[in-house]
Length: 460
Image 1 (tube, rainbow, N blue to C red):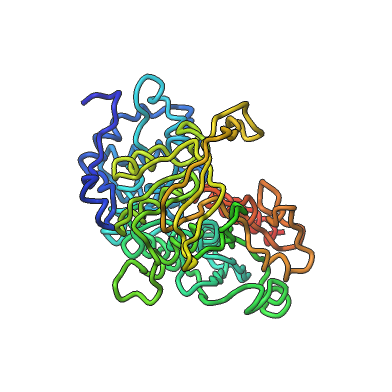
Image 2 (cartoon, rainbow, N blue to C red; image 1 turned 90 degrees about the horizontal axis):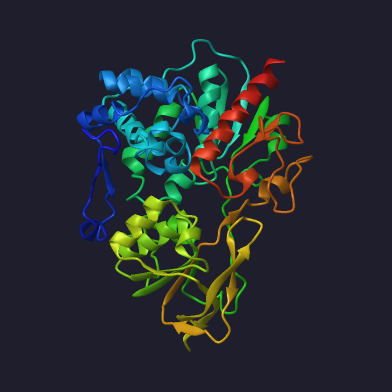
């Protein structure tokens, strides 16, 4: 065993997986997980915990994996995380726990994420559930949104004994986990639904098809329905566009709509009632994880797919692993390229994307080098579908129907960083509704912090 290198994890062959929606990464076996666990040097001052937004006792669970006690490893993880199977798959470990790993100084960091995934999957397959509350507290908390922030907040409050109800606008719980992340990265029935079931098993109630701001309001929940506190974890589902000519042309999607159709509505199936109007050549504009998800979905649906991004590969905000997988599968990267117009044919459908080549100048406020147009470098990319993946912002419905709830100029809810307290008494918020679009694990961290804040508030 080479202690400087991770135990490799099995994956589907790129040529095979590019034609199906089955999971790309196949995960560790118990033997492989135990071998990888033995690479951990069990630091006294574990930096990996500091890199985890939900502060999992990482050395503690890894020690149990070393000993082969996977159930105990799971209970250690589930003390801090409501969604370990999800996090083991989609967290950017390379910039969080694994990025802090001391083993990574002279070699490769310990594969914390893959071990977390193995432990959580083993627990699910063996019917192991997280531990619930010992005593009930006779106070009601409403959680708005069943994405990672809402599920985490609800799970933590239920473990403390509170009477928690989640209100979800869609017909299926899970938020971005079910509509935003493709099946080949995060299986819906086998993984996401089982994690949601674990939260429900703690005593959490779930009401779907309830649009807060339309069906009822936060004020009504508190004043008429007897909720003592509210957590807003409604996410950021309002897509952004470039504002270039032709963007309203038929065949232009937001990545949100495209992925929701594919993931939640199963639009890739022949008998689906919500088909995706997919052509033979697709351009995905953007360079984040969502752009990679949309591009890899289009590829699996049979299209030649291009990522169009105005900076270089070094500035791509997507995870290195996602870029690597996309390249392996055959996604074409048109970097240092910026769209200026969507071209329509005489029938009103996309026929091309006018672009200009870019070069990088001095760093901007984000720290990345600012892209600048190269005069005279315009060209037309022949495509018949364009997917805009430029980020999202919160829907203003909740903030506009709630008295005394402060928002900022980006329409995000203003909340204190430590515990998510908003300007309205008894109302807390976290995740993308506060920060704008971010990662699953950061939303979970915010949900966890808000649960602590709500517990303090209701204990006063």
